Image 1: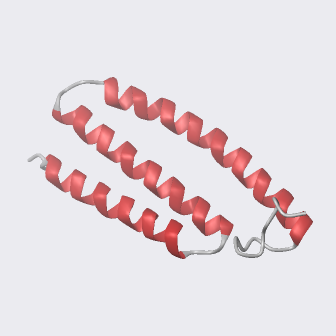
Image 2: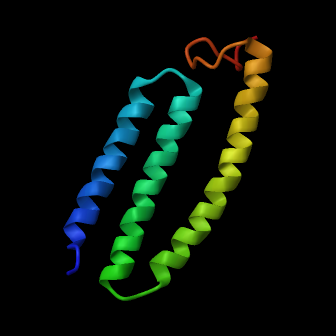
Length: 101
């Protein structure tokens, strides 16, 4: 018994929507960062679903490379968040204004 691709796409759409809502409504930098990662994983789920549908490994290989880049992004992003927290003592996006003098 196979799960239809529409279920995967529906789940991916829901996850992506949750990520977009998290980015647009939250003011905590860590929560915004997690929401961006959630959107990235929703796209990965879509790629894997289409890869399975068309019996091709191209989508899964692409997802592997996207996950490697995402891991590097997490390391750099969290390092930036820690550095900003040490400087400003907050991770609230509203209170962090690095570009101002």
